[in-house]
Amino acid sequence: MKGNVCALAVLASAALVFTGCAPNTPSTDTAVVAPAPAVVESSTPTPTPTQSPTPSASPTPTTEPALLAKGDSGDEVKDLQARLKQIAWWNGKISGEYDDQTVSAIKGFQAKRELPETGEVDQKTLDALHEMTREPTDDEKNNRLTPGKAILKDGDSGDKVKDLQARLKQLDWFTEDVTGNYGSVTVAAVKGFQAKREIPETGEVDQRTVDKLNEMTTEPTDEELNNKPKKEDKDDEKSSDSESKQGEKAEGLPDECMTGKVMCISKKSNKLWWLKDGVVSISFDVRFGTDETPTREGTFYVDRMRKDHVSNMYHTPMPYAMFFSRGQAVHYSSDFAARGYNGGSHGCVNVRDKGKVAELYSQVSIGTKVYVYS
Image 1 (tube, rainbow, N blue to C red):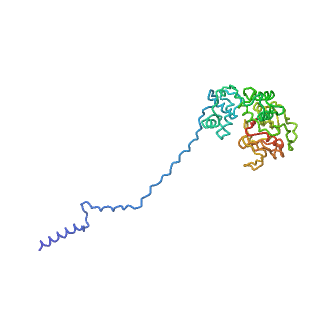
Image 2 (cartoon, rainbow, N blue to C red):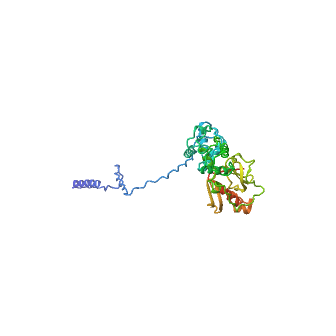
Image 3 (tube, helix red, strand yellow):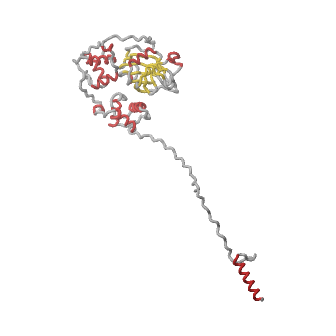
């Protein structure tokens, strides 16, 4: 009986061990650790943080390298000066030296085309100049004066000769009546005109002479072609004592004002002289821009004309406006007429004599030279 009881006790103990119900006593066996629960991944992906872009440094503006600059010399400079001469940015002989005159001419050319006014020739300046000009001849680059084929000469007659004489008369080179006959008086007038412009003095009219004469004059009127008296301008007023009289030879004015038709404007004297080959035709008082809006100085050319212009920026009338440097123009100013030198312009050259500026306007044309100096 005892044996059966013992056997049952052993079996019960074994059963407790296998079902995990061990007695609450320390065990020397290694504990069985339950596996960690599996991580369930979300079906929605976690967004990757977006990194803010690192701002890049603004590129530093680069200046076009100069191909030609002050101090240079040689054939390339000759070519440059000859091309500038074709479009009236160069006066005088070709020197081949990149001097102050060349710098001034290049600055004027650049300003007219809204290029940086460096006075140096970069690729953009050179390209713009080449687009507007032809390849200079060897004669042009070396100041050799070779006569062209005669278009009009001694012994010719007709309407073309009348046109020639009337144009020469506008510049005071021809003082006789227009006849239409090419004689000794016309020969002398043509020679004088040619000499002043470094054209071979043949007394005959070649294409170069025609081009230069047409550039400097206006289409002759019927009155001019047929020796009829000009109509008097009713608005014309008497000149002040300080003004030069018509036909007076200019003295003390810059050389830039002595050839061809020029509006010669002195900021020091507050004067404008309208000259034809150094002879004063009209002159009057003028007023300039203030320190904040100064009138630009240098050599310019009339590029626009508006008889009844109104300023787009200041909405003020600008009668008889002759534009020469972007928005700056010679024009009549009622404010100048009323207030005199107590005021100033926004950069324009103001005229207070309406009659005289109207007369000037009738004689000026696109391409007329304007020289402003102190």
